Amino acid sequence: MDTIPSINDAERSSTDETPILTDYGLSTEIITFATLDGNLFRVDKSVLSTASTVFRHMFEDATDDETIVQLKDSMAAWKLVLDILYEADAVKEGGEVQVIDCAILLCDKYEMKLVRSHLILLLW
Image (tube, rainbow, N blue to C red):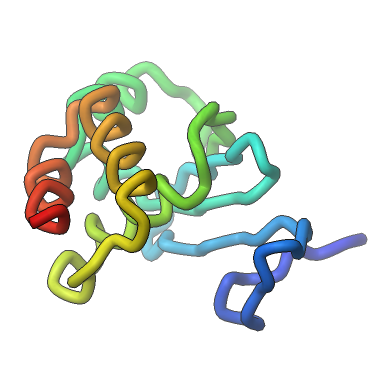
């Protein structure tokens, strides 16, 4: 069985197409996001529910313990959003403006106001 390497396992080049698993999940209630480029993010449902009314409502209706949700958004934007959710103080810069803009759109889409505020500060 093939395993998906963790983002911490090795540095990746921009041309490497091997999917990565970024594990933010610390609790027993986990959701896994799959981005269009095949990358996976394991995230605590409680963290997302606290940050987003959209996710809170989605999880209230869910029946599975662990769910995989296919996202149509970029890995870089989700990684930035999740890094802020888990370690906002550690995120001092967001990289490319295009990634920050995409992350802001994600925050609008999923109603993540506090993360959006942090992203706006990165643009200053």
